[in-house]
Amino acid sequence: MSTEITHDTAHDEHDHHGPAKGLMRWVTTTNHKDIGTLYLWLSFIMLLYGGGMAMIIRLELFQPGLQFVEPHFFNQMTTMHGLVMVFGAIMPAFVGLANWLVPMMIGAPDMALPRMNNWSFWILPFAFAMLASTTFMEGGAPAFGWTFYAPLSTTFAPDTTDFFIFAVHLMGISSVMGSINIIATILNMRAPGMTLMKMPLFVWTWLITAYLLIAVMPVLAGAVTMMLTDRHFGTSFFDAAGGGDPVMFQHIFWFFGHPEVYIMILPAFGVISAIVPTFARKPLFGYSSMVYASASIAILSFMVWAHHMFTTGMPVAGELYFMYATILISVPTGVKVFNWVTTMWKGSMTFETPMLFALGFIVMFTIGGFSGLMLGVAPVDTQYHDTYFVVAHFHYVLVTGALYSIIAAFYYWVPKWTGHMYDETLGKIHFWWSTIAVNVLFFPQHFVGLAGMPRRIPDYSLQFAEFNQISSIGGFAFGLAQVFFLYIVIKTIKGGVKATDKVWEGATGLEFEELPSPPPYHSFTQAPPVK
Amino acid sequence: MQQQQHDEDYITSVERRRRTWRIVVAHVLIVVTFFVATFLWGKF
Image 1 (spheres, one colour):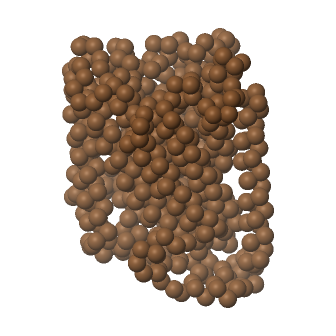
Image 2 (cartoon, chains in turn green, brown):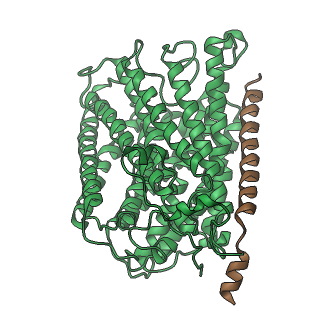
Image 3 (cartoon, rainbow over the protein chains, first blue to last red):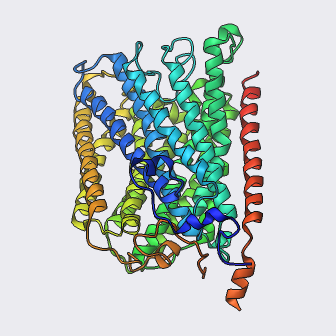
Protein backbone atom coordinates (compact mmCIF):
# COMPACT_ATOMS: atom_id res chain seq x y z
CA MET A 1 0.00 0.00 0.00
CA SER A 2 1.09 3.51 -0.67
CA THR A 3 0.71 6.73 1.20
CA GLU A 4 -0.41 8.32 -2.06
CA ILE A 5 -3.99 9.26 -1.40
CA THR A 6 -5.25 8.87 -4.93
CA HIS A 7 -3.43 6.40 -7.10
CA ASP A 8 -5.73 3.99 -8.83
CA THR A 9 -7.40 6.09 -11.51
CA ALA A 10 -6.03 8.17 -14.34
CA HIS A 11 -7.98 11.35 -13.55
CA ASP A 12 -6.17 11.65 -10.25
CA GLU A 13 -3.31 13.20 -12.12
CA HIS A 14 -5.37 16.39 -11.97
CA ASP A 15 -3.96 16.75 -8.46
CA HIS A 16 -1.20 18.94 -9.81
CA HIS A 17 -3.49 21.34 -11.66
CA GLY A 18 -4.20 24.80 -10.37
CA PRO A 19 -7.62 26.39 -10.38
CA ALA A 20 -9.47 26.97 -13.68
CA LYS A 21 -9.63 30.53 -14.95
CA GLY A 22 -12.55 32.95 -14.98
CA LEU A 23 -16.09 32.68 -13.71
CA MET A 24 -16.41 28.99 -14.57
CA ARG A 25 -13.81 28.21 -11.92
CA TRP A 26 -16.42 29.10 -9.31
CA VAL A 27 -19.39 27.50 -11.08
CA THR A 28 -17.78 24.13 -11.73
CA THR A 29 -15.32 23.90 -8.86
CA THR A 30 -15.14 20.77 -6.76
CA ASN A 31 -12.27 22.09 -4.65
CA HIS A 32 -13.03 22.33 -0.94
CA LYS A 33 -11.18 25.63 -0.59
CA ASP A 34 -13.06 27.26 -3.48
CA ILE A 35 -16.39 25.98 -2.19
CA GLY A 36 -15.51 27.18 1.32
CA THR A 37 -14.79 30.62 -0.11
CA LEU A 38 -18.12 30.62 -1.99
CA TYR A 39 -20.01 29.71 1.19
CA LEU A 40 -18.25 32.43 3.17
CA TRP A 41 -19.00 35.10 0.56
CA LEU A 42 -22.63 34.03 0.30
CA SER A 43 -22.97 34.25 4.06
CA PHE A 44 -21.38 37.72 4.10
CA ILE A 45 -23.78 38.94 1.40
CA MET A 46 -26.67 37.47 3.37
CA LEU A 47 -25.33 39.12 6.55
CA LEU A 48 -25.44 42.51 4.86
CA TYR A 49 -28.89 41.78 3.37
CA GLY A 50 -30.31 40.59 6.69
CA GLY A 51 -28.51 43.45 8.41
CA GLY A 52 -30.14 45.93 6.01
CA MET A 53 -33.53 44.63 7.12
CA ALA A 54 -32.45 44.98 10.77
CA MET A 55 -31.64 48.63 10.03
CA ILE A 56 -35.19 49.15 8.72
CA ILE A 57 -36.57 47.50 11.87
CA ARG A 58 -34.43 49.68 14.18
CA LEU A 59 -35.25 52.80 12.16
CA GLU A 60 -38.98 52.20 12.57
CA LEU A 61 -38.55 51.48 16.28
CA PHE A 62 -36.40 54.58 16.86
CA GLN A 63 -39.46 56.32 18.23
CA PRO A 64 -43.06 55.32 19.00
CA GLY A 65 -45.70 55.65 16.31
CA LEU A 66 -45.50 54.65 12.66
CA GLN A 67 -42.80 56.63 10.83
CA PHE A 68 -41.28 54.88 7.87
CA VAL A 69 -42.97 51.56 7.00
CA GLU A 70 -46.41 49.98 7.06
CA PRO A 71 -47.02 47.39 9.81
CA HIS A 72 -47.39 44.59 7.25
CA PHE A 73 -44.04 45.49 5.68
CA PHE A 74 -42.49 45.65 9.17
CA ASN A 75 -43.69 42.07 9.77
CA GLN A 76 -42.11 41.04 6.46
CA MET A 77 -38.84 42.60 7.61
CA THR A 78 -38.76 40.78 10.99
CA THR A 79 -39.62 37.49 9.26
CA MET A 80 -37.12 37.80 6.44
CA HIS A 81 -34.41 39.14 8.76
CA GLY A 82 -34.71 36.02 10.92
CA LEU A 83 -34.84 33.59 8.01
CA VAL A 84 -31.95 35.20 6.15
CA MET A 85 -29.71 35.45 9.21
CA VAL A 86 -30.35 31.88 10.41
CA PHE A 87 -30.37 30.03 7.08
CA GLY A 88 -28.38 32.46 4.94
CA ALA A 89 -25.73 34.04 7.15
CA ILE A 90 -24.85 31.87 10.18
CA MET A 91 -25.35 28.34 8.82
CA PRO A 92 -23.55 28.82 5.47
CA ALA A 93 -20.68 30.61 7.24
CA PHE A 94 -20.03 27.54 9.40
CA VAL A 95 -20.36 25.25 6.35
CA GLY A 96 -17.81 27.49 4.62
CA LEU A 97 -15.44 27.18 7.57
CA ALA A 98 -15.97 23.40 7.58
CA ASN A 99 -15.17 23.22 3.87
CA TRP A 100 -11.97 25.19 4.27
CA LEU A 101 -10.79 23.62 7.50
CA VAL A 102 -12.02 20.05 8.01
CA PRO A 103 -9.96 18.47 5.18
CA MET A 104 -6.86 20.47 6.19
CA MET A 105 -7.31 19.61 9.87
CA ILE A 106 -7.65 15.85 9.35
CA GLY A 107 -5.03 15.56 6.62
CA ALA A 108 -7.45 14.82 3.75
CA PRO A 109 -6.93 16.03 0.17
CA ASP A 110 -10.54 17.22 -0.21
CA MET A 111 -14.09 16.44 0.90
CA ALA A 112 -15.28 12.86 0.41
CA LEU A 113 -17.87 13.84 -2.23
CA PRO A 114 -16.56 16.91 -4.05
CA ARG A 115 -19.18 17.05 -6.82
CA MET A 116 -22.00 16.86 -4.29
CA ASN A 117 -20.19 19.62 -2.42
CA ASN A 118 -20.49 21.87 -5.47
CA TRP A 119 -24.20 21.06 -5.75
CA SER A 120 -24.80 21.67 -2.02
CA PHE A 121 -23.49 25.19 -2.44
CA TRP A 122 -25.04 26.16 -5.76
CA ILE A 123 -28.55 25.27 -4.61
CA LEU A 124 -28.37 28.02 -2.01
CA PRO A 125 -28.11 31.21 -4.13
CA PHE A 126 -31.23 30.07 -6.02
CA ALA A 127 -33.08 29.32 -2.78
CA PHE A 128 -32.28 32.74 -1.32
CA ALA A 129 -32.95 34.58 -4.58
CA MET A 130 -36.37 32.94 -4.67
CA LEU A 131 -37.05 33.79 -1.02
CA ALA A 132 -35.89 37.40 -1.46
CA SER A 133 -37.93 37.86 -4.65
CA THR A 134 -41.18 37.41 -2.69
CA THR A 135 -40.65 40.91 -1.28
CA PHE A 136 -41.50 42.29 -4.71
CA MET A 137 -44.50 40.05 -5.41
CA GLU A 138 -48.17 40.68 -4.81
CA GLY A 139 -48.95 39.95 -1.16
CA GLY A 140 -45.35 40.60 -0.16
CA ALA A 141 -42.80 38.39 1.53
CA PRO A 142 -43.70 35.97 4.33
CA ALA A 143 -44.81 38.04 7.32
CA PHE A 144 -45.57 35.33 9.88
CA GLY A 145 -42.28 35.36 11.79
CA TRP A 146 -39.27 33.12 11.12
CA THR A 147 -41.05 30.40 13.14
CA PHE A 148 -43.93 30.40 10.58
CA TYR A 149 -46.55 29.16 13.03
CA ALA A 150 -49.75 27.74 11.55
CA PRO A 151 -52.41 28.97 10.88
CA LEU A 152 -50.63 32.28 10.11
CA SER A 153 -48.48 30.42 7.58
CA THR A 154 -51.32 28.28 6.21
CA THR A 155 -54.85 29.65 6.32
CA PHE A 156 -53.89 33.35 6.51
CA ALA A 157 -50.66 33.40 4.52
CA PRO A 158 -50.08 35.12 1.16
CA ASP A 159 -49.60 33.11 -2.05
CA THR A 160 -45.88 33.84 -1.93
CA THR A 161 -45.65 31.36 0.98
CA ASP A 162 -45.26 28.60 -1.61
CA PHE A 163 -41.98 30.17 -2.75
CA PHE A 164 -40.90 30.23 0.87
CA ILE A 165 -41.77 26.54 1.25
CA PHE A 166 -39.78 25.62 -1.86
CA ALA A 167 -36.84 27.74 -0.67
CA VAL A 168 -36.85 25.96 2.71
CA HIS A 169 -36.90 22.60 0.93
CA LEU A 170 -33.88 23.61 -1.13
CA MET A 171 -32.00 24.84 1.95
CA GLY A 172 -32.80 21.53 3.67
CA ILE A 173 -31.53 19.48 0.71
CA SER A 174 -28.36 21.55 0.67
CA SER A 175 -27.82 21.12 4.41
CA VAL A 176 -28.44 17.37 4.32
CA MET A 177 -26.03 16.88 1.42
CA GLY A 178 -23.43 19.07 3.13
CA SER A 179 -23.81 17.14 6.39
CA ILE A 180 -23.48 13.72 4.81
CA ASN A 181 -20.40 14.99 2.99
CA ILE A 182 -18.83 16.22 6.22
CA ILE A 183 -19.65 12.97 8.04
CA ALA A 184 -18.17 10.88 5.20
CA THR A 185 -15.09 13.08 5.13
CA ILE A 186 -14.46 12.89 8.85
CA LEU A 187 -15.22 9.18 9.21
CA ASN A 188 -13.41 8.07 6.08
CA MET A 189 -10.73 10.53 5.01
CA ARG A 190 -8.58 11.05 8.10
CA ALA A 191 -4.82 10.67 7.68
CA PRO A 192 -3.30 7.59 9.30
CA GLY A 193 -2.81 8.23 13.01
CA MET A 194 -5.55 10.87 13.17
CA THR A 195 -7.73 8.96 15.62
CA LEU A 196 -11.09 10.37 16.62
CA MET A 197 -9.75 11.56 19.96
CA LYS A 198 -6.85 13.36 18.25
CA MET A 199 -9.13 15.40 16.00
CA PRO A 200 -9.26 19.15 16.59
CA LEU A 201 -12.35 20.24 18.54
CA PHE A 202 -13.66 22.11 15.48
CA VAL A 203 -13.82 18.80 13.59
CA TRP A 204 -15.53 17.09 16.51
CA THR A 205 -18.13 19.81 16.93
CA TRP A 206 -18.85 19.74 13.19
CA LEU A 207 -19.23 15.94 13.21
CA ILE A 208 -21.83 16.28 15.98
CA THR A 209 -23.48 19.24 14.22
CA ALA A 210 -23.74 17.24 11.00
CA TYR A 211 -25.66 14.52 12.87
CA LEU A 212 -27.98 17.15 14.33
CA LEU A 213 -28.58 18.47 10.80
CA ILE A 214 -29.43 15.12 9.25
CA ALA A 215 -31.85 14.44 12.09
CA VAL A 216 -33.71 17.75 12.11
CA MET A 217 -33.65 19.08 8.55
CA PRO A 218 -36.03 16.30 7.40
CA VAL A 219 -38.35 17.29 10.26
CA LEU A 220 -38.35 20.87 8.97
CA ALA A 221 -38.95 19.54 5.46
CA GLY A 222 -41.86 17.48 6.81
CA ALA A 223 -43.33 20.55 8.54
CA VAL A 224 -43.26 22.71 5.41
CA THR A 225 -44.57 19.83 3.28
CA MET A 226 -47.53 19.48 5.64
CA MET A 227 -48.01 23.25 5.36
CA LEU A 228 -48.05 22.88 1.58
CA THR A 229 -50.64 20.09 1.61
CA ASP A 230 -52.77 22.00 4.13
CA ARG A 231 -52.67 25.03 1.85
CA HIS A 232 -53.38 23.32 -1.45
CA PHE A 233 -54.33 19.65 -1.18
CA GLY A 234 -57.14 19.61 1.36
CA THR A 235 -55.30 18.10 4.32
CA SER A 236 -55.81 19.37 7.88
CA PHE A 237 -52.58 18.62 9.70
CA PHE A 238 -52.65 21.99 11.45
CA ASP A 239 -56.24 23.08 10.83
CA ALA A 240 -58.47 22.62 13.88
CA ALA A 241 -61.60 22.95 11.70
CA GLY A 242 -60.61 19.77 9.86
CA GLY A 243 -59.55 17.83 12.98
CA GLY A 244 -55.93 19.00 12.94
CA ASP A 245 -53.94 20.77 15.63
CA PRO A 246 -52.10 24.10 15.24
CA VAL A 247 -50.14 23.41 18.44
CA MET A 248 -48.82 20.27 16.74
CA PHE A 249 -47.10 22.61 14.28
CA GLN A 250 -45.25 24.27 17.14
CA HIS A 251 -44.14 20.90 18.51
CA ILE A 252 -42.82 19.81 15.11
CA PHE A 253 -41.24 23.18 14.40
CA TRP A 254 -39.40 23.33 17.71
CA PHE A 255 -38.28 19.70 17.45
CA PHE A 256 -36.34 21.10 14.52
CA GLY A 257 -35.84 24.59 15.94
CA HIS A 258 -34.16 23.83 19.21
CA PRO A 259 -31.44 21.54 17.83
CA GLU A 260 -31.08 24.23 15.15
CA VAL A 261 -29.91 26.59 17.89
CA TYR A 262 -27.11 24.13 18.70
CA ILE A 263 -26.35 23.68 15.00
CA MET A 264 -25.50 27.37 15.06
CA ILE A 265 -23.46 27.28 18.26
CA LEU A 266 -21.59 23.93 18.41
CA PRO A 267 -19.19 24.82 15.54
CA ALA A 268 -18.67 28.14 17.32
CA PHE A 269 -17.51 26.18 20.38
CA GLY A 270 -15.06 24.40 18.09
CA VAL A 271 -13.68 27.70 16.79
CA ILE A 272 -13.21 29.12 20.29
CA SER A 273 -11.54 25.87 21.39
CA ALA A 274 -8.98 26.38 18.61
CA ILE A 275 -8.29 30.06 19.24
CA VAL A 276 -8.04 30.23 23.05
CA PRO A 277 -5.19 27.67 23.40
CA THR A 278 -3.21 29.40 20.61
CA PHE A 279 -3.21 32.81 22.31
CA ALA A 280 -2.91 31.40 25.83
CA ARG A 281 0.02 29.30 24.58
CA LYS A 282 -1.28 26.28 26.47
CA PRO A 283 -3.01 23.08 25.31
CA LEU A 284 -6.79 23.08 25.61
CA PHE A 285 -7.80 22.13 29.15
CA GLY A 286 -10.04 19.05 29.29
CA TYR A 287 -10.08 18.02 25.62
CA SER A 288 -12.06 14.82 26.18
CA SER A 289 -14.55 16.55 28.48
CA MET A 290 -15.10 19.08 25.67
CA VAL A 291 -15.95 16.22 23.28
CA TYR A 292 -18.33 14.59 25.75
CA ALA A 293 -19.89 17.96 26.65
CA SER A 294 -20.56 18.67 22.94
CA ALA A 295 -22.18 15.25 22.51
CA SER A 296 -24.25 15.76 25.68
CA ILE A 297 -25.47 19.15 24.48
CA ALA A 298 -26.46 17.59 21.14
CA ILE A 299 -28.40 14.74 22.78
CA LEU A 300 -30.12 17.07 25.27
CA SER A 301 -31.05 19.46 22.45
CA PHE A 302 -33.57 16.87 21.19
CA MET A 303 -35.27 16.63 24.57
CA VAL A 304 -36.13 20.23 25.43
CA TRP A 305 -38.06 21.65 22.46
CA ALA A 306 -41.29 22.48 24.32
CA HIS A 307 -39.60 25.12 26.49
CA HIS A 308 -40.41 27.42 23.56
CA MET A 309 -44.08 26.63 24.14
CA PHE A 310 -44.66 26.96 27.88
CA THR A 311 -47.50 29.43 27.29
CA THR A 312 -49.47 27.11 24.97
CA GLY A 313 -50.88 25.39 28.02
CA MET A 314 -49.26 22.05 28.72
CA PRO A 315 -49.68 19.78 31.77
CA VAL A 316 -47.62 20.83 34.81
CA ALA A 317 -45.67 17.56 34.57
CA GLY A 318 -44.71 18.54 31.00
CA GLU A 319 -43.65 22.00 32.10
CA LEU A 320 -41.56 20.55 34.93
CA TYR A 321 -39.86 18.02 32.63
CA PHE A 322 -39.02 20.55 29.92
CA MET A 323 -37.86 23.09 32.52
CA TYR A 324 -35.48 20.70 34.28
CA ALA A 325 -34.20 19.20 31.02
CA THR A 326 -33.52 22.71 29.68
CA ILE A 327 -31.63 23.78 32.78
CA LEU A 328 -29.62 20.55 32.60
CA ILE A 329 -28.02 21.83 29.35
CA SER A 330 -26.24 24.49 31.39
CA VAL A 331 -24.05 21.71 32.89
CA PRO A 332 -22.17 20.65 29.71
CA THR A 333 -22.19 24.27 28.52
CA GLY A 334 -20.69 25.32 31.84
CA VAL A 335 -18.02 22.63 31.41
CA LYS A 336 -17.01 24.32 28.18
CA VAL A 337 -16.82 27.83 29.60
CA PHE A 338 -14.88 26.45 32.59
CA ASN A 339 -12.42 24.70 30.27
CA TRP A 340 -11.80 27.83 28.17
CA VAL A 341 -11.21 29.91 31.29
CA THR A 342 -8.96 27.22 32.75
CA THR A 343 -7.01 27.04 29.48
CA MET A 344 -6.24 30.74 29.89
CA TRP A 345 -5.32 30.35 33.57
CA LYS A 346 -1.60 31.12 33.97
CA GLY A 347 -1.17 31.15 30.18
CA SER A 348 1.17 33.53 28.35
CA MET A 349 -1.71 35.42 26.86
CA THR A 350 -1.66 37.94 24.05
CA PHE A 351 -4.66 39.75 22.68
CA GLU A 352 -4.61 39.75 18.90
CA THR A 353 -7.94 40.32 17.13
CA PRO A 354 -9.04 36.63 16.95
CA MET A 355 -8.44 36.31 20.70
CA LEU A 356 -10.37 39.53 21.38
CA PHE A 357 -13.38 38.20 19.48
CA ALA A 358 -13.01 34.83 21.23
CA LEU A 359 -12.96 36.51 24.64
CA GLY A 360 -15.92 38.65 23.60
CA PHE A 361 -17.67 35.41 22.69
CA ILE A 362 -16.97 33.78 26.05
CA VAL A 363 -18.21 36.76 28.09
CA MET A 364 -21.24 37.72 26.00
CA PHE A 365 -22.32 34.20 25.05
CA THR A 366 -22.39 33.51 28.79
CA ILE A 367 -24.67 36.54 29.28
CA GLY A 368 -26.96 35.05 26.60
CA GLY A 369 -26.72 31.69 28.36
CA PHE A 370 -27.82 33.17 31.67
CA SER A 371 -30.84 34.92 30.14
CA GLY A 372 -31.58 31.56 28.51
CA LEU A 373 -31.64 29.95 31.94
CA MET A 374 -34.14 32.59 33.07
CA LEU A 375 -36.33 31.85 30.05
CA GLY A 376 -36.09 28.13 30.76
CA VAL A 377 -37.82 28.56 34.12
CA ALA A 378 -41.45 27.85 33.23
CA PRO A 379 -43.23 30.14 35.75
CA VAL A 380 -41.20 33.23 34.85
CA ASP A 381 -41.25 32.43 31.14
CA THR A 382 -44.96 33.20 31.30
CA GLN A 383 -43.94 36.83 31.82
CA TYR A 384 -40.94 36.87 29.45
CA HIS A 385 -42.55 34.97 26.57
CA ASP A 386 -42.80 36.94 23.31
CA THR A 387 -41.20 40.04 24.84
CA TYR A 388 -38.02 41.88 23.88
CA PHE A 389 -36.27 39.92 26.64
CA VAL A 390 -36.37 36.92 24.31
CA VAL A 391 -35.03 39.07 21.46
CA ALA A 392 -32.16 40.25 23.69
CA HIS A 393 -31.43 36.67 24.77
CA PHE A 394 -31.16 35.09 21.34
CA HIS A 395 -29.23 38.00 19.88
CA TYR A 396 -26.61 37.67 22.62
CA VAL A 397 -26.35 33.98 21.76
CA LEU A 398 -26.39 34.35 17.99
CA VAL A 399 -24.67 37.70 17.38
CA THR A 400 -22.13 37.93 20.18
CA GLY A 401 -22.03 34.13 20.19
CA ALA A 402 -22.22 32.57 16.74
CA LEU A 403 -21.36 35.66 14.64
CA TYR A 404 -18.47 36.64 16.91
CA SER A 405 -17.00 33.15 16.57
CA ILE A 406 -17.28 33.39 12.76
CA ILE A 407 -15.50 36.76 12.78
CA ALA A 408 -12.87 35.34 15.17
CA ALA A 409 -12.41 32.38 12.82
CA PHE A 410 -11.93 34.74 9.87
CA TYR A 411 -9.16 36.70 11.62
CA TYR A 412 -7.56 33.49 12.93
CA TRP A 413 -7.43 31.53 9.66
CA VAL A 414 -7.42 34.23 6.97
CA PRO A 415 -3.60 34.56 7.06
CA LYS A 416 -3.44 30.81 6.37
CA TRP A 417 -6.05 31.01 3.59
CA THR A 418 -4.66 34.05 1.75
CA GLY A 419 -1.03 34.18 2.87
CA HIS A 420 -1.64 37.79 4.02
CA MET A 421 -1.85 39.11 7.57
CA TYR A 422 -4.86 41.32 8.18
CA ASP A 423 -4.22 44.83 9.54
CA GLU A 424 -4.05 44.35 13.32
CA THR A 425 -4.98 47.96 14.12
CA LEU A 426 -8.07 47.79 11.91
CA GLY A 427 -8.99 44.42 13.43
CA LYS A 428 -8.84 45.84 16.95
CA ILE A 429 -10.89 48.89 15.92
CA HIS A 430 -13.43 46.47 14.41
CA PHE A 431 -13.58 44.51 17.69
CA TRP A 432 -14.04 47.48 20.04
CA TRP A 433 -16.43 49.28 17.69
CA SER A 434 -18.58 46.13 17.32
CA THR A 435 -18.47 45.22 21.00
CA ILE A 436 -19.51 48.63 22.31
CA ALA A 437 -22.19 48.96 19.63
CA VAL A 438 -23.63 45.47 20.07
CA ASN A 439 -24.09 45.99 23.82
CA VAL A 440 -25.71 49.39 23.27
CA LEU A 441 -27.95 47.60 20.77
CA PHE A 442 -29.04 44.53 22.70
CA PHE A 443 -28.55 45.16 26.43
CA PRO A 444 -31.40 47.72 26.75
CA GLN A 445 -33.71 45.20 25.11
CA HIS A 446 -33.56 43.15 28.32
CA PHE A 447 -35.08 46.11 30.18
CA VAL A 448 -37.88 46.89 27.73
CA GLY A 449 -38.65 43.18 27.57
CA LEU A 450 -38.89 42.82 31.34
CA ALA A 451 -41.10 45.93 31.35
CA GLY A 452 -43.45 44.18 28.94
CA MET A 453 -42.64 45.38 25.42
CA PRO A 454 -43.78 42.66 22.99
CA ARG A 455 -41.57 41.54 20.11
CA ARG A 456 -42.58 41.77 16.43
CA ILE A 457 -44.47 45.09 16.72
CA PRO A 458 -43.82 48.27 14.68
CA ASP A 459 -45.21 50.60 17.38
CA TYR A 460 -44.98 50.64 21.17
CA SER A 461 -45.99 52.49 24.32
CA LEU A 462 -44.29 55.78 25.15
CA GLN A 463 -42.50 54.47 28.24
CA PHE A 464 -40.25 52.28 26.06
CA ALA A 465 -39.06 55.18 23.89
CA GLU A 466 -35.65 55.96 25.47
CA PHE A 467 -34.39 52.39 25.59
CA ASN A 468 -35.53 51.87 21.99
CA GLN A 469 -33.68 54.98 20.84
CA ILE A 470 -30.50 53.81 22.56
CA SER A 471 -30.96 50.37 21.02
CA SER A 472 -31.42 51.83 17.53
CA ILE A 473 -28.30 53.99 17.83
CA GLY A 474 -26.34 50.86 18.83
CA GLY A 475 -27.91 49.04 15.88
CA PHE A 476 -26.82 51.62 13.33
CA ALA A 477 -23.29 51.67 14.79
CA PHE A 478 -23.08 47.87 14.75
CA GLY A 479 -24.32 47.74 11.15
CA LEU A 480 -21.70 50.27 10.09
CA ALA A 481 -18.99 48.28 11.89
CA GLN A 482 -19.74 45.27 9.68
CA VAL A 483 -19.40 47.42 6.54
CA PHE A 484 -15.99 48.34 7.96
CA PHE A 485 -15.35 44.60 8.36
CA LEU A 486 -16.12 44.15 4.65
CA TYR A 487 -13.37 46.69 3.92
CA ILE A 488 -10.93 44.74 6.14
CA VAL A 489 -11.83 41.46 4.38
CA ILE A 490 -11.23 42.91 0.89
CA LYS A 491 -8.02 44.66 2.00
CA THR A 492 -6.66 41.40 3.46
CA ILE A 493 -7.50 39.36 0.36
CA LYS A 494 -5.86 41.92 -1.92
CA GLY A 495 -2.60 42.16 0.00
CA GLY A 496 -0.81 42.65 3.27
CA VAL A 497 2.22 41.58 5.19
CA LYS A 498 3.18 38.03 4.21
CA ALA A 499 2.02 35.49 6.80
CA THR A 500 4.40 32.80 8.00
CA ASP A 501 3.46 29.16 7.52
CA LYS A 502 2.67 28.78 11.20
CA VAL A 503 0.98 32.21 11.34
CA TRP A 504 0.66 32.28 15.14
CA GLU A 505 3.43 31.45 17.60
CA GLY A 506 1.18 29.14 19.61
CA ALA A 507 -0.72 27.60 16.69
CA THR A 508 -1.01 23.83 16.48
CA GLY A 509 -2.72 21.48 14.04
CA LEU A 510 -2.00 20.10 10.58
CA GLU A 511 -3.18 23.23 8.75
CA PHE A 512 -0.56 25.34 10.55
CA GLU A 513 2.24 22.81 10.98
CA GLU A 514 2.16 20.91 7.69
CA LEU A 515 0.95 23.42 5.08
CA PRO A 516 2.38 26.69 3.77
CA SER A 517 0.45 29.98 3.82
CA PRO A 518 -1.47 30.04 1.53
CA PRO A 519 -1.87 26.28 1.13
CA PRO A 520 -1.57 24.78 -2.36
CA TYR A 521 -4.78 24.40 -4.35
CA HIS A 522 -4.62 20.65 -3.71
CA SER A 523 -3.24 20.06 -0.24
CA PHE A 524 -2.26 16.74 1.32
CA THR A 525 -1.93 14.69 -1.87
CA GLN A 526 0.45 12.78 0.42
CA ALA A 527 -0.96 11.88 3.82
CA PRO A 528 0.80 14.01 6.44
CA PRO A 529 2.44 12.57 9.54
CA VAL A 530 0.21 12.87 12.61
CA LYS A 531 1.90 13.28 15.97
CA MET B 1 9.28 1.60 11.30
CA GLN B 2 6.93 4.49 12.00
CA GLN B 3 6.71 5.26 8.27
CA GLN B 4 5.94 1.59 7.55
CA GLN B 5 3.14 1.59 10.13
CA HIS B 6 1.87 4.86 8.64
CA ASP B 7 1.76 3.25 5.20
CA GLU B 8 0.06 0.10 6.45
CA ASP B 9 -2.64 2.12 8.21
CA TYR B 10 -3.68 3.63 4.93
CA ILE B 11 -6.68 2.19 3.10
CA THR B 12 -6.92 1.89 -0.68
CA SER B 13 -9.06 4.19 -2.80
CA VAL B 14 -11.40 1.32 -3.74
CA GLU B 15 -11.95 0.44 -0.11
CA ARG B 16 -12.49 4.10 0.74
CA ARG B 17 -15.03 4.56 -2.05
CA ARG B 18 -16.97 1.52 -0.85
CA ARG B 19 -16.99 2.86 2.70
CA THR B 20 -18.08 6.30 1.52
CA TRP B 21 -21.11 4.88 -0.25
CA ARG B 22 -22.04 2.78 2.77
CA ILE B 23 -21.92 5.96 4.89
CA VAL B 24 -24.02 7.88 2.37
CA VAL B 25 -26.70 5.19 2.11
CA ALA B 26 -26.90 4.78 5.91
CA HIS B 27 -27.35 8.50 6.45
CA VAL B 28 -29.89 8.92 3.65
CA LEU B 29 -31.91 6.21 5.41
CA ILE B 30 -31.75 8.25 8.64
CA VAL B 31 -33.00 11.32 6.76
CA VAL B 32 -35.89 9.38 5.18
CA THR B 33 -36.82 7.88 8.55
CA PHE B 34 -37.02 11.27 10.24
CA PHE B 35 -39.02 12.71 7.31
CA VAL B 36 -41.58 9.90 7.43
CA ALA B 37 -41.71 9.99 11.25
CA THR B 38 -42.62 13.68 11.09
CA PHE B 39 -45.76 12.84 9.11
CA LEU B 40 -46.65 10.09 11.57
CA TRP B 41 -46.23 12.62 14.40
CA GLY B 42 -48.52 14.98 12.48
CA LYS B 43 -51.15 12.15 12.58
CA PHE B 44 -51.01 11.45 8.85
